[in-house]
Figure 1 (spheres, rainbow over the protein chains, first blue to last red):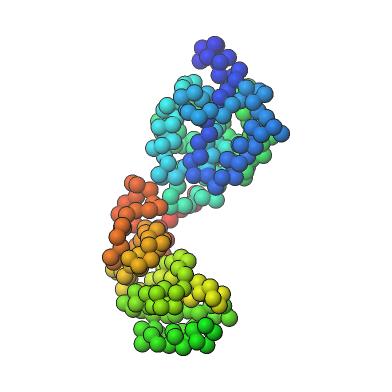
Figure 2: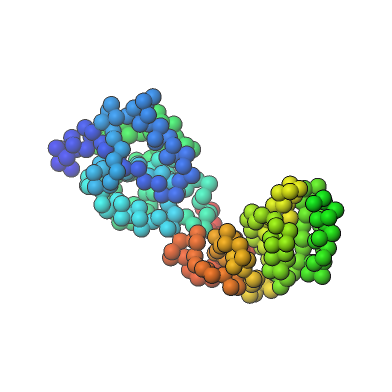
Length: 144
Length: 150
C-alpha cells in the first residue's frame, strides 16, 4: 500500500454500517459509539451513508444466504484500500447460528470469496461493548 | 355471551369437530380434520366474531398440525382450531386468506418452511426463505438434514 493511501485511511476512517442478518444488538452498540458518551467522531470516525464514501465496513450478524450477494456487492463498491470489521460473535464465527439452514458463513469467508486479500478485523462479543469496538478499530488501524 | 352459551354455540358444528378440549380456563381447542378446517374457521370468525391472531404449523409424529389461534375478546378466551393433516406425502389444506386477508403472510410462511400447500391462496409466493432456495426443501420438517457441527 502506498504511504499516502495509508495515511488517508488511518487519519480519519469513515465507516459504513452493514447489517448482514444481525439481531440488532450489535447495531445498537455501534450506534452507541457515536453518541456523546463515546463520541468516536472526535477521532474522525464517521458513519456515512454510502459504501463509496467509506474506508471501513462495520459488518454485524451472521451472513445469511439472502444477504450474501448484497454484502459482496457492498464490498465491491467500497473504495479500496478498505478494512472490514466483523463485529460480534455471529460475524466472527456464526455463533449460535452455526447449524442454521439460512446461514452462508462467517463474514471473512464471504468477503474472501471475492477478494482473497481483504483486510479483516474481528471484534468478538455478544454484543461487544462500545469500548471493545473502539479498541478493535484502533488496534486494526495501528496494525496496518 | 357467557362461557356456557359459547360452548353451546360451538356444539352446533360438533359434526365437523373431532372433539372440543379445554386445556385451561382461558383456552378451548377445537380439534378437526383438515377437510373441515375451512368451515370451522369460517364459523369461528364470522358467526362467533372471534379475532384471528396467528396460525402455527407443527410437524407432528404422524401428521401435520395447523393451529389457527383466535381470540374471543368478550370472554378473554382463546379458541384454537387445530387441524390435522394426515396425508404426509402431499399435505394440503384450504386457505383462510379469502375471508381473513390478515392470514396471508402467516400461511405463506408455513408454506415456505413446513411445505403445507394452501389451496385457493391468492398470492402464494416465497416469503422468508432466500431467493436461491431450492424448491421442495422445507427446513422445519423433521426429515430436513441440518448442517453438521464441526
